[in-house]
Image (tube, rainbow, N blue to C red):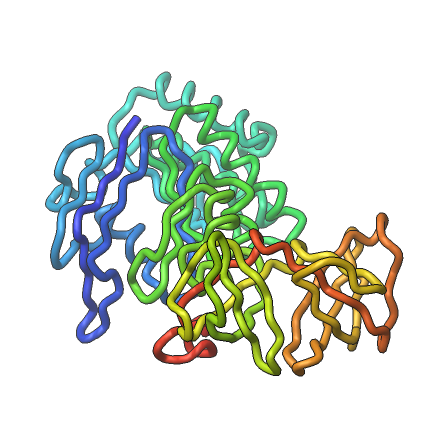
Length: 366
């Protein structure tokens, strides 16, 4: 099954640079996600790999072969669109066997592959149904089966679950991954849903404005974000502004507004330099009394019950606001207006240089 490699690939549409000097390596049999906000270039990148458009600069390799000038039908690629793109005048069987028939495969071979694909997507009993007789989840499974039947070694999925309701979407995303893994395919999955990407991907590339900001496993991106945007887009973070007050042997003291101080692990910057602290809502603890170091006081302004978790919105004594998430079944619930203390583990605080264009602009999802 193929590896995919992009080397310094750029694609422009007029003055708009949709993909900006991207280099990327997707491994054989890997389930890889392109993740980012709408308009970041991830779909354009997928269409470049598929051969639906050509790059202005750079090289694209599939299975070690340069494919810049290879037409889509000769790339061994199966493309699953967000809109399903099924033929409305064909039933399930005719849609799924369309690719093998166009390629001139024999009826016996086409039928055998189609039966296997339809059994895999659990639609073997709906062979004679037309697209308008199927649910959204069923139509998406037909689209996946059709891509598999075309002999695809590389499966490209462009927001394949975007039009489905939440319950079906959550179920089907695991089915698609399972199918790709069972067949030993290489899959590249485009999505703007970070929860979807985290749940099913071996690795993820986070994109913004045509560039790749960071590539890593879901755990790596969540536990070790390399920039403010990734810390905000993958999961959720609180952001506090400050400057480096003191540098110790194995840690640094960051002074926030109102002369509040937090100790962070390591020596991230120079003394006096402006920084941004990123803190995951679930990494801190709450107590009614002050205990130990790295503790700030605050008042609970509001809270929301979210089933497994309680989400507290807290105003610190310097008027900064943060969100804290705690398990609803384990801990005592706190009340609106209650004064509490927040304990920050120093090794769970990420420190970034203050962005030149300001924190709000850096966090903006264009």
